[in-house]
Image (cartoon, rainbow, N blue to C red; front, top):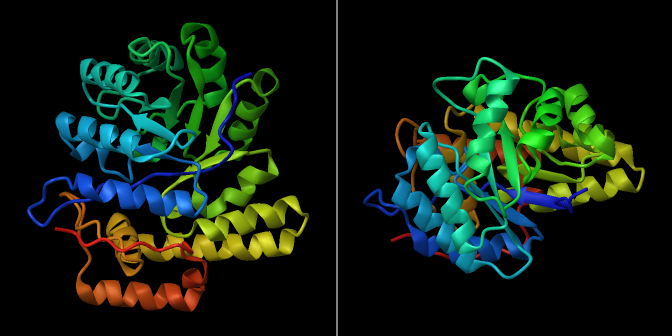
Length: 312
């Protein structure tokens, strides 16, 4: 059994300068913000970070800067998925070279495997490029339409991927998630990936989670977890309702990532805009979003240690 992730892993956004280039300078204050609010690590270059919209050089540079910016013990997990597996393997090897804590890989997003066996074979080849790093399969069928039972994936991958550490499980199939947690008496680290119903993961035994709203309201989730573990289900459910409402409200703007950046900007962390095809919210939409989230109670649980950073 591996030593699994405990607590919250944020999926950081990528900061951009006014000219559209990646802003590496924002990484250090961003990392300090997350550490100060008791986030345990980051999953870099994933969906929230627009990894698939970045060049390989940008992805490598971001990975390096995050590893450099954090203290020992703060986990930097690097997403290495790509439409070309040669590039995925190169990113995996790079993550190992720079001292990342782990790698993750979403399944193929264009030509998709036709079976669990084919998916395992694919993942095994990427994982082999960084054999000494823990490898996590990134299960997010809403993005890549690769919808196989992950319990079956674990059964087949157990021998095929020696450095398999677990799954970043961003899907709503709680029964399959629970089966993965119990596989081989909890051998693998199954990270819960849906912020809006984290409590459902806790009910079946989740101990680690990866999410985008952990970027700005980690205090809410810390209180939710504490209330759940103390047996105060009513308080845990109340906090989860705020989380769910926050996620729904932000998704309703048509620009979830832009909404995340707008909230972080109110805290002093200016990450710039978004890359196409994602949209940037108008000033009017941002004002409406902020007002809605204040009414929903979200702002009562923003990260308690803000930073000041001016995007250049």
